[in-house]
Length: 180
Image 1 (tube, rainbow, N blue to C red):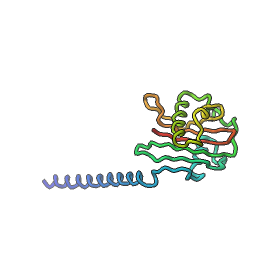
Image 2: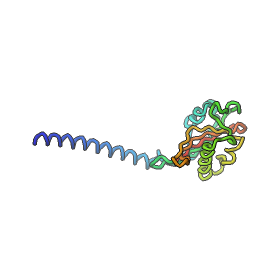
Image 3: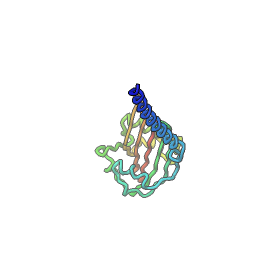
Image 4: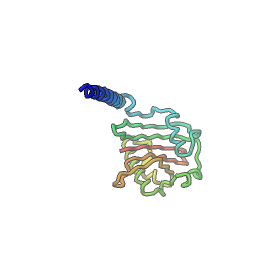
């Protein structure tokens, strides 16, 4: 009988610790969901916050002149969001934007990349309205596309897209991240 009581004592001790840890995790998650870490941000960003865009697609942060626009939506519990940036850079040459460097010209995009651009453009049309290029512009010869990440559901529908777009003439880099 004493052995059974000892076992139950340790069982409830471990159970209590696990319950406490779970409650603490849930509390922190709810706190983050309802505080400033999960709110819409428009044009509140530093150069430091967007350098990953230029570094990630091989252009390098040293080209960054100015962050022109930013839109960062709040995150849902599952991480759904839409973020978009417009960045002015000092220079870019078309010969840097080659397929060897994982760039595709907009009018030569693969079907999967085209679907990802359409997803980005549909969100941009609603959220950024006047500053993010539309689908026809992005899929034209004027833009080069660098897909950082594209994920599809089993039904071949793009549900995650992280894409950088460059217009060499205007020296503008646009970046969008969508998860739905």
